[in-house]
Amino acid sequence: MNELAVLSKAMIQERKDILLSILGGFIAGIAGVALFSASGYLVSQTVFSPPLYTLIVLTSMVKLLGLLRAASRYGERLYSHRATFSMLSRLRTSFFAKLIPLTPGILNRNRSGDLLARIVGDVESLQNYFLRVAYPPIMVVMVFLATVLFISAFSFWIALLFVIGMLATAFVVPGIVLLGQRRIHGRVREQRAQLSTEVTEVLYGFRDLKVYGQLAQREQQLQQASATLAAEQQRAAGHLLRGQSMHALVTFLISWGVLALGAYLIMSGALAGVFLAMLVMASLTVFEEAAAMATLPAYKEDSEHAAKRLTETVQPTDVQSLRPGGALSLDQAVSLELSGVTFQYEGEWRPALKDVSLHISPGSKTAIVGPSGSGKSTIIELLLKLRTPTAGDIRLNDVSVMELEEKSIWEAANVVLQQSHFFRGTIRANLLLDEEEHSDEQLLDVLAKVQLPDKSLTDMVYEKGENLSDGEKQRLALARAMLRQGRLWLLDEPTSSLDYVTEQHIMKHLYAQTAQDTLILISHRLTGLEEMDRIVVMDQGKVVETGSYSELMEQKGYFYEMKKIERQMIGEAAV
Ligand SMILES: Nc1ncnc2c1ncn2[C@@H]1O[C@H](COP(=O)(O)OP(=O)(O)OP(=O)(O)O)[C@@H](O)[C@H]1O
Image (cartoon, rainbow, N blue to C red; front, top):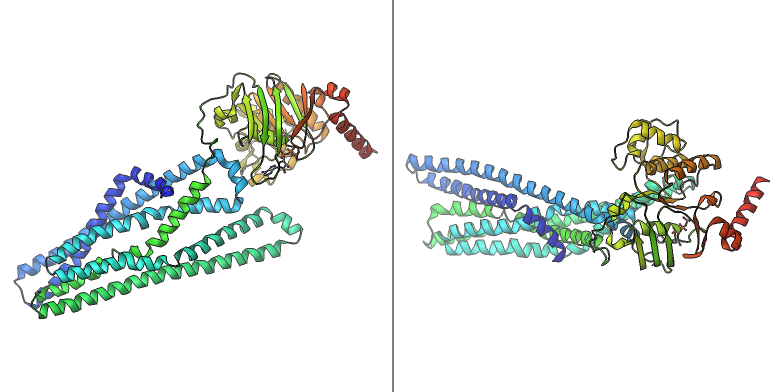
């Protein structure tokens, strides 16, 4: 199974601990069987009043086996758990490393609440793969073979009964558990996904749900989803318990079988009576090792499902699977070239960008304007290689983005997106996201430039910037970008929540800093665009006009009409 290849690879990397745990488990297993068999034999021997040294040897053996069993069981647990947690940490790191470049596409395909719970839960489920799926059969086979070999020295027929018991506990009971297993666990997974989606919706939408009076209804839905999940989990646990009970019943029947068959063999003279207790005790102990087989199908199915989903989640498209090696230089302003770029979001019926061609020379200032939904922000996402064009090519400094490493593009770009994220912590921590070294003076200077002179670097920012106004968030995001060393500026409506005067102050500092750099500014407002070398006007995913401010005003085309409407609106609002 291909999905489990990733687990097998992780297991090979932990082979030393795995081999040690198998050795520990095997010694513990046979020491257990030997311990109980020796006890049985000791009890039987006592009846015949043997010489004292026989009793001393047997009692010491029992004690030593007890110690050996405890010590090797400890070793087994230590190494098997260490191997499991190391594998888990390897899997987590490699999985998230694969996930990061694919994030925009993945978020497009999945509900984010479900996705988060799924990723965390699925990686956790994989921890059972070694401990409860791969390991038990190895142990059962090894301990059983050793025991059966030992028993066959006393009686072929009792050894045969052990083999029948092993087949029943290793195949028949797990087979019965497997029936119905898929259906029950499928429902648990479905309900878990439903619950995490509900939780995310209520958490993120709490304020809106409250204001629109929908909170009580959503909470009720949440409780219902939680209750359904609890019921499904109870059913699944019951199913597992039935499997374990079935195993206990088989073990019990085999031990009675050994007792009855042993008694018959003793009567027929084929077995010495002194061994009967030993054989019964061996049968009681050896099947303990096989107890994990009853729950193996459940864990196997869970791990396979988790591995399959994780593999599917990080399945790169053909284009994304290319491993580019190119890097974007930080020493020169970046040139941009979009040639016939078309882009369609997954599941959308029409493209967001249609055959867009643009050349932006290094060091130039370009504004992209156009009505809402015309594809402006999509261009920024494509330039940042957060998404891949459906058709056409994008070249930065004359190198196709497909050949450039994402990280190098992100390092070379100072980006302010429409929604910036803020983390719980100080203003300083939120400014220094890229771990570059900046003195407090530099940080305070940039705060002054973005018109936040009253903020202290030690002021707290709450989760998602809850205690900041939208305008403060935008200014902090601009400050964050202004602290970076990139030569390409991608600003998506960075000042839309600011008043005109504050905006003008900030833009003055920004233009001074970006004098030698390439800047792309997406803007809804058409004021202040005279400063731009070029304005690109977009409508319905297409470039409909380009030119300088004066050229576009002279053309009296789309931009001129937009400007006229804006003037009328401002005029009306001012009246
Ligand atoms: N994640 C997405 N999944 C599907 N469709 C999307 C997604 N993001 C944007 N779109 C669609 O793509 C089109 C272009 O969106 P885009 O955000 O680029 O427009 P925009 O010009 O930046 O709009 P605005 O000025 O409102 O920010 C829109 O029709 C939008 O509905």
